[in-house]
Image (cartoon, rainbow, N blue to C red; front, side, top):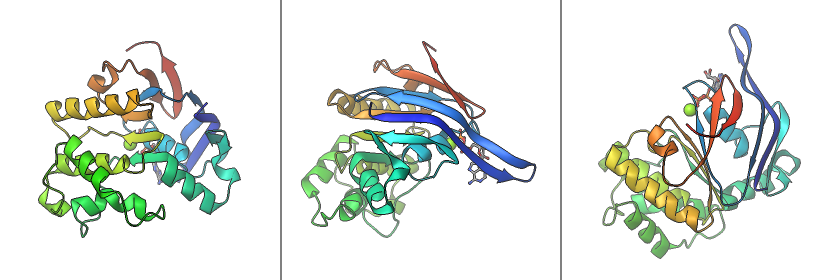
Length: 226
Ligand SMILES: Nc1ncnc2c1ncn2[C@@H]1O[C@H](COP(=O)(O)OP(=O)(O)O)[C@@H](O)[C@H]1O
Ligand SMILES: [Mg+2]
């Protein structure tokens, strides 16, 4: 089992008291799975992804990545796990505005003690997301959809085993969404495991034949079909 959540709970303090954003979630994702989580906004999808990625500490319950409990290791080991094993595609813009497109894609490598980077691979990834030739631009010169593609290229730079993607095609037109899904498909065929949060029925209905989950008021259940 590559990703395993057991009885995961995360609450937030709210005006009306304690609000349970993730409510006793169990999830088991195998290596090579393409898993899609659907659900209305506010249902807890982003919170769940950040728990799985070790960015947020749960109130209770466990997350194991490749058998290792996120919170039973020290901060340094957790950071290494995040950096080496997981590629994150965040819901909102996450590029550094003062770095070029290429530098943004290479950034995760500088935390992985490989500051020299992997320029040829970064260029290849930019080509694959349709941004060949834009490597020296600053993010501010790109459209929202193009910036999203840079973030997608960046998520693959460390050759992660897992991609955690939060509404990765949320602000893209339909044609671009199809291209991005094709890229995901390629990587999934090469064995990369995907956990993708989306509103998009399109994404959920791809030829990838994904496992489908529905998040509702913090609880997660697997669906057999849409
Ligand atoms: N940092 C936070 N502090 C307080 N409440 C939060 C915080 N983050 C999320 N929430 C609340 O938790 C619920 C789930 O949020 P979220 O995980 O972002 O859902 P989704 O991604 O499905 O839209 C929402 O009601 C949201 O307002
Ligand atoms: Mg969200």
